[in-house]
Image 1 (cartoon, rainbow, N blue to C red):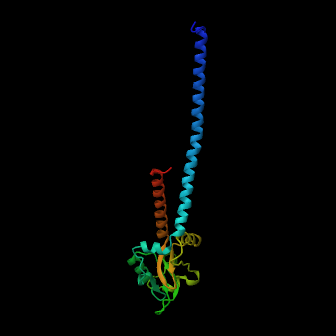
Image 2 (cartoon, rainbow, N blue to C red; image 1 turned 90 degrees about the vertical axis):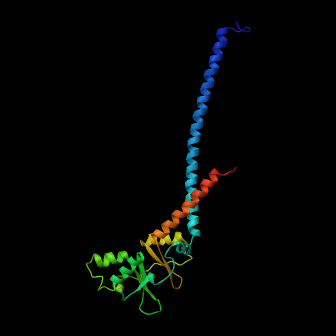
Length: 213
């Protein structure tokens, strides 16, 4: 007897309480795990969506003019164009010399009237594949004509520029503000997008590590 209660009964009650507490603890732990996983998944989903939304906003706020300023060859010059009566050989040599993949084609004369564009693809598909001589073929014979030319202006945002390139399956777009001011490629646009996303990731990391409530 302990305090008037049979010893075997008190031990039984104590054992029963311990078992119940263990069961409750296990149930609580299981609930925590069930709650924790969706919360973590939701957090990842939120941060991923936030990155996409912020990245798109950033692209809409970044203009072609800003992309041109980051290019080493961003300054407009005669290296950007050739004439319709130039040979393809000279045009391709001009591209290789300046490490570029396309040239705006101008009509003969000093007015700088745009006639079209010639790209590496034009050279490969219309000269090399067809076994034509680049020294005897004029640029005007193989260029993409002006009526099919896709252009952007300096204030076009890179989201629109990227969409234009994707929809028209092209890799180079002349920048025209009444006159030629530059050329952007899909590489330039992708680089700008990657830089934008890197900035957003850094901002989120700073937010996570910062003293916020």
